[in-house]
Length: 334
Image (tube, rainbow, N blue to C red):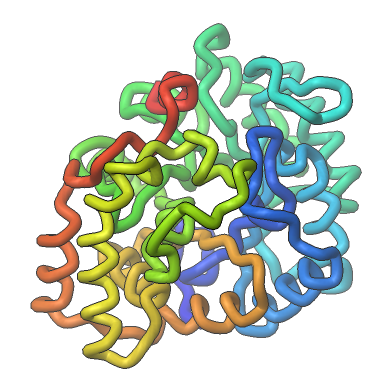
């Protein structure tokens, strides 16, 4: 595994582990992962040099933090553990009932999360989505207090817009920002990415494999379970009409993969890693074989011609369909 920095000083593995697919969310999942497989995935990822493990209160909810806590036991000092807050839930966790970026919830969510993680601190604490009813200064100010108390090392935001990021960074340095970024979602290149580089903030792309689409293993959605996020309308890029148009991107990925002799997943991740040393994607996997394949990506070298071929097939704004349903789009970029 290779390593890189988020912000001025936080070193992380070039690829982290995104934990959402291991626990699901109240919105749905990609199918249940057996408990023993979850353990094997964590163990193999860490064996391969992965240090950054990305969880959230929302994953499960609550389940993911418990999974990470068990996985980190006995090797906490080798890992960069991240979690996120910002939502409210039905008592049984079956649904998200709203957003809460308040100072009180920043503290409550972290303290409860630390109990589930069985840790004294987390390395990165993110606001999962900007709460439109709470000034970002309040949210980040409360998170900064947790840094002063030693319960958090670094702060992050997920899916902010440029103005929100600048206002947050003025209250306390933001080390990392999460946003969707991949070959089929490049819009941040004309948005938040230049601001991140201006302010020396690292980018942690989620869904770097296009929710599995860019691996080349999904050529149809017909056999997906109706509860699968990709089948439910959560991601309109998978809907009939859009899906078929987007296959041209996968065809380009697989063509380059064939030239080098690696998997489509490795090409998609290598493309992201070639976009800057300040980028550390967090792919999610549900099988150990996927772990072993994806984490070979930092060693894949792409030529200028191959980068050009990939980007010609997947230009900025060239994906058919929005990346979220309208309800989800209303929560991002604010």
